[in-house]
Length: 387
Ligand SMILES: *Cc1c(COP(=O)(O)O)cnc(C)c1O
Image 1 (cartoon, rainbow, N blue to C red):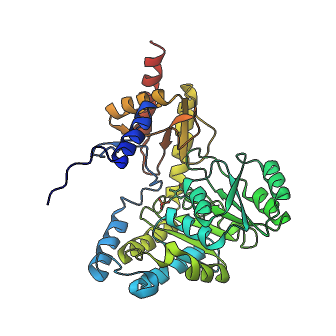
Image 2: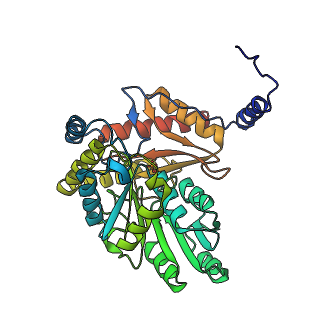
Image 3: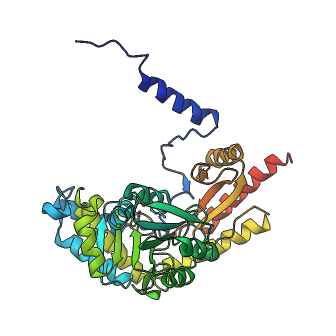
């Protein structure tokens, strides 16, 4: 039996209205199908490991050995020896007693916050924290108090004012849209002085920062200083998934209570194997990190010479501040016409008036490719000033 199209449905009306809102503000989001032949200055594969032939071969071999997927959650029958080995390698990398795999970084943050927080918990978040951290606290029914970006005095004031029994300070390690880093030592000291725990999401620091790629927390800070550390595998490590690292008690608690861990299919074992290979390369080829940091310095110098409005950042994330949404879209479009991919970031991902190009560098970029990017950016600039 066919049903008449419900053009008068309140849902249809609401969807249309929501779409119109986004379009009218010039904020309509669109996915681009990435073709071959694009010079990638948009992705987060900072060390080039996603395209490394050894990582790819290990993943293919893993799929032949264990199948394409894990087939079940970790607590049912999806937890294999390769997952166990990966957890141990990740824990060793960041100097923690134990680590727990999650299917994505988004899910790891939701899982941790939901498992640790409730309406009696106060959560203190840097204003520029990743959306998943804000969403996690909301899901937990905790109220997030947001402190000014990297402002320890503001954090101290908010902590002093709160009456909740358990307090949790949460920050990105490297801020994903800004590229600057949190003051881990300052956060740890401030949190400790209020008996608060500290959670750092090091999605962009892992593999890139630290003496050997252990990230902006890693072995430089122990579990007493940073009790909860989150890392992701889909950025510098080139694969997919995430992990939480900390004490035995924390990890056991997550296995018991983190719904985003319990009620989801385990990471495909082939991905775990590929990640182990990526970790081996990270260890054996420190020159990748050296090349990445040399590329960052080279790009920054060329951009400064051309008077391009780069934000202060020493990480692979190099924001070019254009402020106006349409301007950012126009520049990204023009770069695209040169077959160069960069991210155009606008609200609500960043605050209003802070639209930017998010340019990311990799260890595998060649000098002439960075030159091509800078020339194209100079062309965008020249076009605007009408010269
Ligand atoms: C990318 C990112 C995440 C999400 O990780 P996925 O594995 O992509 O879900 C979480 N936190 C930060 C800071 C990120 O940049």
